[in-house]
Image 1 (cartoon, rainbow, N blue to C red):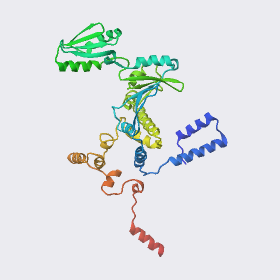
Image 2: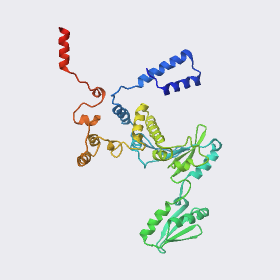
Image 3: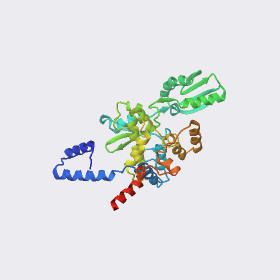
Image 4: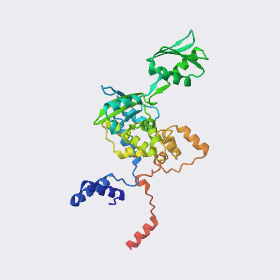
Length: 372
């Protein structure tokens, strides 16, 4: 059996590291060959269909209680599980419950340091700094009652940028914002806008909690901002992770994004007690990222961008694809599985990939020659 150079190099390195020699090494090599033979597939095998069935069939068995709130004494975060999480991954959604797990360098790996850093990470909005807010309809101004005097300086620093053309003043812990446009509608719009203004911490991190995991003190977050977090001196960039595929893609590139798709899908299935061969998930992750961008599975991604008109029409928006194809004069070369099944031809999979022609006249002549 043929063994690739890379596999043999890895096998030799493994044996050297573990001191395996002689007969034991030969036995290990035989086991490796048997496993490789087991994982091989024949030319023409419909691996796409097999992978799709192998992932989707167990996914239908997932528990319907998919949204849970992990709220023990040491953590608080919403967890999307089961089929809804798989849909988020395979649809490559940009809006979902984003989270991060932040690890620290050895010198910052303590409860006190982790709490201190968590305090710096947690994003603050102006609404987190006030006790109450109101609109004074007599003077046509917004009133914000700050939680303590220490927030006054921050409020006076950020408000002029977001409440332009407004007169800002203070009395005690109360901040008054009087805009030039003084209709009730404008006041309400301005109040809603300024309450969402970012005032401190890392933008995008809504909540943080410090927990101990093995020997490590880590910070779990609701919300994610991978780029900003990795710039922090205290953070261990080799282990810090997020479930946001697009942020990983922006920071580390397409290969890292592909690994996030793979690990998130695998983790979701394992959490439900389901075993799916990793190769099926690898094929799916590769298909979503092979051209250097992240594509979803649906009508605007992989299925909607197939070169075959009939394959696109078979998935969704049938009328649209057929009309567009006729308008632009597209040709379907019938090279795939779906389009050949639609027109009733033999699909180019399995034995259908082999094209043999038999000359019956030559066979008859040869048979006569042999008989004579």
